[in-house]
Length: 122
Image 1 (cartoon, rainbow, N blue to C red):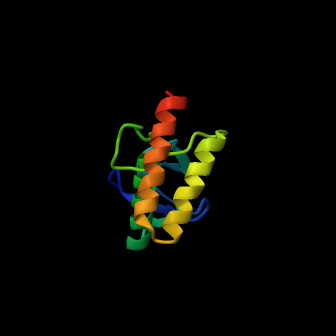
Image 2 (cartoon, one colour):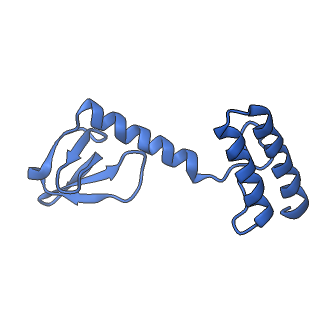
């Protein structure tokens, strides 16, 4: 078997990339990287197209959320600072505007949240 082949481990209910054999076990690694695990060959089968796609999307999402957003990146809305009442208030204001499909008010809330964060959370 070629390294990188995607297999479904029925014992752990996850897709892994084939790495190598280790004694009677097969070494697998999560799609996108991570800690390897040993699987018994009898619990492995080729991953279906759906399982491969799902594992790839999960890995992409993990990469996206692994790095905190840059506060100066204006292409993404700002995140509220945990524990800050004003950030929580402005985030709630933004979410209310989004729910009402009021994009202008949501943008206003983003601007106010950024201004608050620059002043209070440098």
